[in-house]
Image (cartoon, rainbow, N blue to C red; front, side):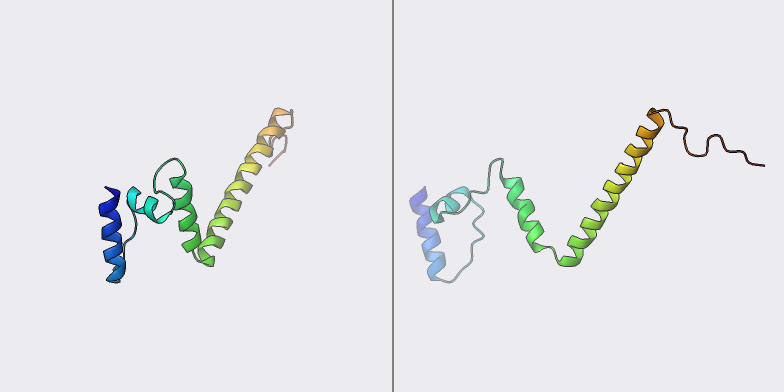
Length: 95
């Protein structure tokens, strides 16, 4: 019950103990975001992003940019071939 949870949290606070507040009742009592529901994944990802250092952020951003550049190149090549352009290397004579 909520009364029991309140008693336990109060005693823990008085004794200087720590509680990670992972349960629903504890979070409702202290007015925090409840760790459940459809928004939980967003908040977990947000916490992870906040804890990353700058080097990790740069590495991820560079990897995403490289991936997007590769996709853009593939689309441009596919569009060029569909418009009737000869694929690169076609029509060249080599001896």
